[in-house]
Image (cartoon, rainbow, N blue to C red; front, side):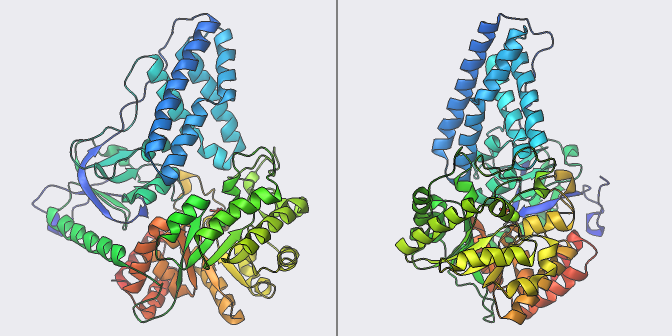
Length: 562
Ligand code: PEP
Ligand code: MG
């Protein structure tokens, strides 16, 4: 990275600006801290007999799991879930079996742990998607267990005395989940994408965050840095006057967000519904405490990630009813199981696919086994009858008109309004024809990016391609919004794109009628939208679509949205 000397910078210390993908807006300034180095299994670790190794591993793993669970109980929401899931990995039976195998071949406890985790990580990587994403968790568990075995301090994030900025290659979910926002005021990582665990937790905690920052490793611990989670930059030795201005602007933005009471509309009264994404009853209750007009995406598959068998219709009805009840009489868009690929469900996923993201996932699972879909629709219909929520149903991963017709017929038979997610280029191209059979559509920008750019949404090295500011993605969204306008039917966005305040304005300018995002992002999105006119949004949308790339698009839009 070449230091950037601006004209104002001449005659003072040189400033370096590093760029990445902006994921949580806001400014954080302070000395840089980096996670403590991770232990490695010592070379030539003395062999122990198999049972000594197995027992040592067992008690170290149990201690690591106990600590993680303790922190999970002290946390809430996604942070609590991530910590509990990582604790579960430490006690995974498959891991213990691999350790025993290496122990019986004479490896000492730290070596056996390291080899066993390598084997498990190779299996997770081969599975792809969400499983591959858990490899970071696995290595984190390995390091914690080895530190415990070698009597070293627990690896991970320091607890700094003064408010600091956390820089890292990547963060283990267990580290991020335990963060204290009063000590860690911003996060920047060299790896990770806008849907990574780091991003999800940072968003939940409201910590400004930039990921996929090129050359971030060059920034030394102790340097004074400023992270701008809106612009996607990390500035070393920032200009203090400029930073003071940005910090003040950030303070005003946060104040406006805290004071926003809905409903969603621009300063000149153009209505855009602001909705929340949820995955269970607890999340729905949290969302209901925000000024939302409903739920735009209920990810039902996430209720069943730990189930080895399909839940009964009645069990499903209870789970869905808990979410509906939390929303009173508001709108709730339930998505049928989006199993497969990054969200494998033991009872529904087709195993051993060479490329699960392009395999039998989403609606294709229901089409291959209509019983699964019918039982889920029965569960949703029963829950809808028991509550007063305005329930609608949509299917993930629809690619053809025949699929939309097939799905719509099954949902309508149960008396519920029906829509689909637009997540593939074919659905964009067919939007007019699909809408003839549906009541609404909702654009899933996470997958639409992945399939439009042929770039794995989880791959940190491809995060520029899957950046939601990509002009081609914005143009696709406009095609769908225009189809919705012609049909007189709503077109929402429920991917991560809807959580960026500036991008949300651009989406409104493209003609999107609702925005559904993490409930922690709702206020910032609503407040930003309320500060601009629909004409500004349209001009920003035009400028962003005409830009050369995502960074230029974000800058062009920002200039028109102030
Ligand atoms: C999307 O693809 O944008 C979406 C909202 O669905 P998911 O992230 O659950 O795949
Ligand atoms: Mg999707």
